[in-house]
Length: 135
Figure: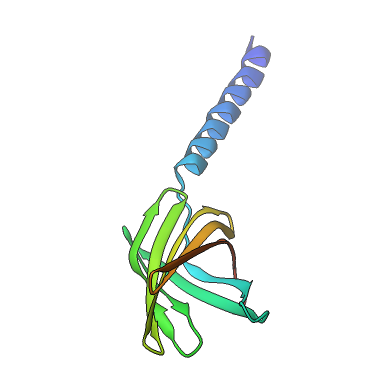
């Protein structure tokens, strides 16, 4: 009888352990903390690389997005599960430019859209940022 119970107990323990690990993985929320990079092509045909540095502290998402001359703090940042959104407001040559970023985090990738309002003119483009592994 002991020979039958031992495999049964081992199987039960392994199943309970596996379910616990799966439940823990399901509870883990994506963490956007880190440096994210993506590139885009300008209207002039130039390719520009952009960097976002994001940090989660408790329930608060903060960070900056690089620009031509400086980093700009993000505003209205939200993180809800895998959904992330924030905006960046810049002034350039008297023009106000607001970019709204929205996407889904999956591992080391954020995919979504960037909507830009440049003095009332709106445009939208796909956004795919990759987490940088650079030290």
